Length: 224
Image (cartoon, rainbow, N blue to C red):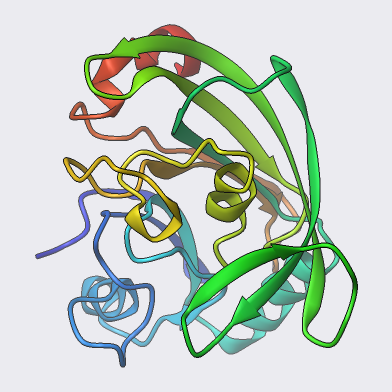
């Protein structure tokens, strides 16, 4: 298997469209995007950020170590814009807003939980969302297409922040979805950042495949 699309490439970085159900890095068994990208460019590529295995969409890798460090620093300083789309069960109370939570990652269970108090291992998580459209699902009632901008990048952040409000992402059985007809309905739609070497603005857009659950909505009407 190879990734379906290169969204941007120069001698320093490459941005690819990671398919859903492909790992971000080697070592956990199964195909991974680092190995696939390295084969494409015929040289080692380096991980800058991760997407969950079931999450597809835009993902940047570096071709040189000096670019890796600068991109990692930009992410830590929140100078790296990440935008996602998701299909969730239900409808948020407000059409747009900000969710802030304290999250604790249980490494033994590979699961993240919303907690009420700060303690060791707890980190603040923040995202903003906007409901783009709703649709009626024959099994799950009303579902929503949501645009999400991350302020922080915590493990399973989008999934647990919506699930904790009883709006799990379709296909996300780990966090309460009863829909087993798709992978977790989360897609890395947009990345925007300053090029780590040239300083020029880089922006890419990735659209999800025309399959369930994305085909419940006219994606081009909202995201083109």
